[in-house]
Amino acid sequence: MANAIEKIQEEHKDYGRVLNALRAGVKTLRGIEWRRQAGQTPEAGADYRATLDLLFSAVYYVRLFPDKYHHPKEEDFLFKAIRERRPDSADLLDQLALQHSVGARLIDELDASLKAYEKTHPDGLEALEAATENFVTSQFDHMSLEEEKVIPLAKSVLTEADWHTIDNAFLGNADPLFGENLEAGFRMLHDHIVKGLNAA
Ligand SMILES: [Fe+2]
Ligand SMILES: [Fe+2]
Image (cartoon, helix red, strand yellow):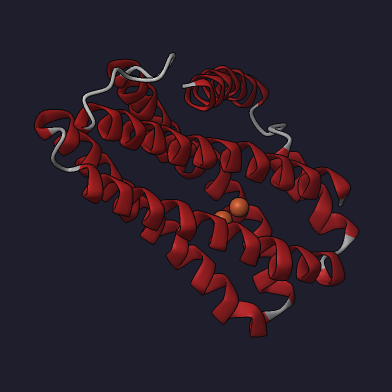
């Protein structure tokens, strides 16, 4: 049991750090804008173009990491097993699956607002701030619901055999090369975004 649960929590932490970096990057843009309006030079390290490029990388990460790596394991293995053991949990699991698709739509809005801001800046910063906050809040709410409701439920209803299948999926054992390559790529991108946006 511990393997899959630990892996989910670890992935949530990684994802959360990129979400916080997104917020930090947009805040940096706001700081650059304030100083520009006040006729001051940007703070050391606060570079408009570099921040924007890192934000594009962050949007790429938050689009792919959940959708290609994290959610399929939740939906195809963890949620599926809970559904079989506890049919009365269907509403909760449906709500979470719906949140996965709403998240994808909110990323489209965030992506569009970032591209628009790149073209029209300094206009468009409010829209980018709103889309970022909308997306980031939805993702933290979603992870809290999984950690507070789904993980305790899974621990109480799943059998050893269920956990064996789920652990294998979460540790990438079904396709080790695919899992390993993907994980290494996400790790490098994660570190680049988190370090870059928090330093700006
Ligand atoms: Fe999820
Ligand atoms: Fe999750």
